[in-house]
Image (tube, helix red, strand yellow):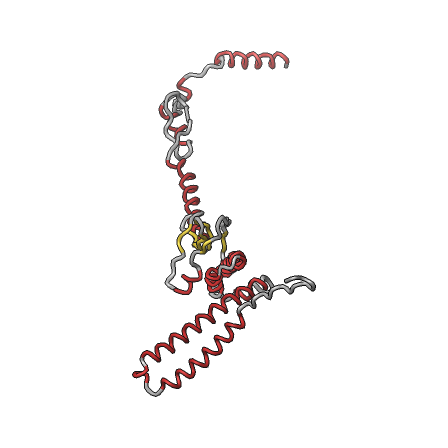
Length: 278
C-alpha cells in the first residue's frame, strides 16, 4: 500500500517538474495583449480622467497639471457682477438722502448723487420750495458740520435749528434787516412751531417785535402812498375820493399812534441830590 502511494507522489512531482512553471504562448492564443503604460492609448486614458478646463498633458508622460481656462475666469466674473449690483443699490439709496453742506460762507441744501459720497443740486420747479431750501449765509467765521438726512421732515428740522442759531447774533447786534430776512425764512416751514415748541421763546419774541415794527412801518408807508395817489389823480377818482381819503386818514392815525407807542421812551435825566449846586 505504501509503495503505491510513493509511486503516485513520484508521478505528480515529475509532472510539475516537466512544466517548471513555464507557459507557452500558444496556451493563451485567444487573449489580446495588455496595453503597456507608455503607449498613446494609455495617455489617452489618463487625459479622459482630467477635470474640465484643463489642457492635454505635455512634456513628461503622465503630467496632468491643470492650466487656466475659461472656467477659471467664472469666479471673477461673478464677483465683478456682485460689486456692480452693490454699487447700484448703494447709489439708489443715496439718491433719497438730503444733505446740508457748507460751501464757503454759505450752507447749501443738496440731494444725494448717483454714486456713493456724491451730491447734486436741489432742483425743483416749486417756487415755495426754492425759497425754503435756498442757501443760507453764515455768520462771519462760523463753521458748519455737514449733515445728512433720510427724510424731508428731518431736513426741515435741521434747517429750523440752523435759522434759530443764525437769528440769535442778528438780534443781539440789532441787525433788523437780517432778522427780517431770517424770520421770513422761518415762516416758510409749517412745522417751525412744533419743532420750536417750548424752546427759544425769548428769542422768538424779540424776532416778532422787530418784524412787527417793520411791517407796521411798511403799512403806514403804503397808506401815505395811497393817499398821495388819490390826491394826485383826484379828478379821475370821482366821488369816491372823499370817502377814500377818510378811510386812509383813519388808518394813518391808528398806525401813527401805534408807532409812537412802540418807540422806546427816552431816559429821564437823574435827579440832583439835595444840597447840590446843580
